[in-house]
Image 1 (cartoon, one colour):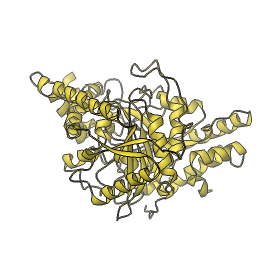
Image 2 (cartoon, one colour):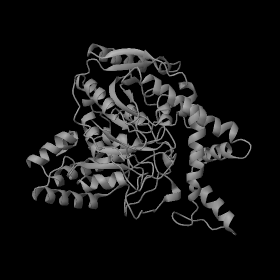
Image 3 (cartoon, one colour):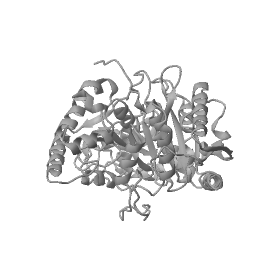
Image 4 (cartoon, helix red, strand yellow):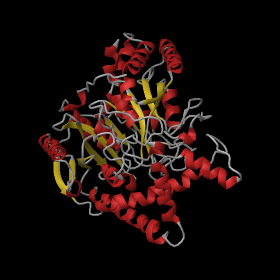
Length: 489
């Protein structure tokens, strides 16, 4: 039943509700698809075949008893940075190999309560540090549109799984662009919610003031549906906001007449690929044709976002990753004394990019440098947030590119960290400001590689960006196109 893997979540939910297919049928179709193509794409680190079929049977029984929910029986994939009770959670790192959490992340728990089926855990850059999914300790994930290229990162396993029809939807995390950038490079929809909108409980922390969990899907309406289930206050997460739970699917119309859309000149810079700039400008022109009021806005501190991020995020990573010492979980390499055990365990367990960022962060926090680097970065972070605050007094949403390039070749940037970091130059500021953003497919470059259009909204303005993205999506066919690739063993 290969055609079942081509459905959107809304379409699959309709078939499940009508009884035309069962969750077991739908889940088995995706497990078969994983078996067929993941040897090439390598999106999954763990496939939970038995657990998925058991959950599918339970979903079918719940539906037979009269229960109904759009996600009941829908097969999804989860980034391996999210804790899953009893299922290995490695964060793409050797230091957590074999770790099976005793609890699940709140976001996953809520999806499971409504009957979603977990297909498995997806590959990622180690501890979410990377823009290509090449920093995984286990494997490199390939882009389904061109298997010689990266799918983006750090949530590349999740974006590739959705693009390659190995899941109807997936969860990722976004610390500096790690949902939106792989969504753009993989040709799917990806949303980074506002900080505090989705509970971070059960998310293994990289940057505690930056991380957010969000969905990948093949339509904006599907992303809204998953977000509906994931949001809401969680007393186990002190950063979770106590906000009314709204239905994000309620305002998904094609009418954007009068919507004020800001376009920042700072997002069209030297280094952006000509095909990307052309495609984004054509998409913005389309929004104007649809009745939106398109106007320029200024975000003057945009060029400071990258250096600020690479002081704040590594500093937080330095503190968060100190806990991985081989004492409570993960592999342990014994030394002659405690400090030698720590040194050997961390030395063998962490990969080069994680070590690089820990050293950057530790340096920025050290005595004599704290004020000059970390404290100054936090002050500039405030200026970045104020730029957005002023812009949203004039416009409802901001539109621009997600990434300055399309998917680059595997190995092309691994020896040039700065070039890799520049992949997120248009996404970092959103995390620093704590606001929301979404990537929606808007075209292809001359090589046939997908390009994403980014909509940015104010804090807790997810309804605005979903509305704008859905309206744009419904007037185009980019989101309906699927990759084709040769299977290799």
